Every structure is written in C-alpha cells, then in structure tokens.
Image (cartoon, rainbow, N blue to C red; front, side, top):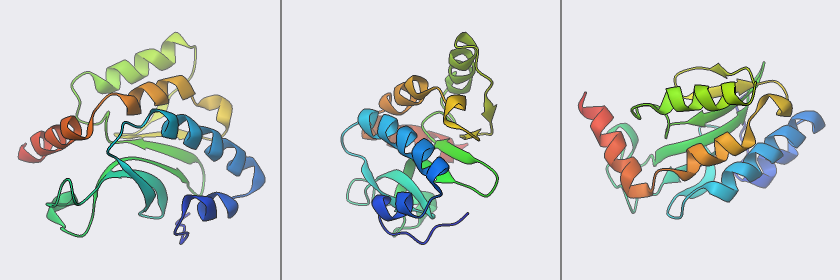
Length: 150
C-alpha cells in the first residue's frame, strides 16, 4: 500500500483504526530510540528515518537527491512492516534479532531487512527499539559504504 502522505501525521491518519493503533505504537517505540542525527519523514511512501543529504551528500545508491534510508515503518497490502537497514549487513545483526525474538517466545517473520507483522502483539517493541538505537549516523554511513564495496 503506497502512501502519498507527505507527513507522518497524514500517513497515520489515512490508516484504518486497527492498523493506525499498531503502526503508531511501533512508530513511538522507534522514534524514542532513534539516535540524534537521523531525520524523520516520508520516504518511498513509508514513515522513515534517513541520514540527511547534508551529512551524506553521495545519497542512497549514489543518487544525490535521495537520502540514505536507516529505518522505516509501513502498512503494506497484506501486512505491516518495520524495515531495519541498521540490522541488514551488520555482522551478527540478524542472529541477534532472531535470538531476541526467540527469548521472548515470539515468532519472527523476517526478510533481509524487514520484520512483517499483522498485529501489534507480533512485534517486540523493546527489540525494535534496541535495534534502531545501536548505530550512530557516522557508524551507519561506514556500514553502508562497507556493504556497497562488496
């Protein structure tokens, strides 16, 4: 479900009530833990946090007008999803995430960098918070550049 909203408030407002409740809760957990330096907004039709172009003028995939995505949150057609680029490509990142879900007795539906969920109870908010709190902007830029060299 691609949104044409231009603000987080507009994005949340257009969601059905059940999804709005879930996305809002995940959004708040992420926002609380996102390190300073990332910028919140809408990117690719999703709520997201990016490395601003002022800090990383090369841009995402060398597109000088596209900020480097760090984390995102979306209501898709058949599920909701948290996108954690900060876990993708980090040595041990995926294992850590899977282990944390397992410790909580929760099932994890995960792609390369996304966690899919259908209801709020399927999301370990504390784990998502820890995941996004880890890399500073500078560390994330280094990680991104390292993965681009491969």
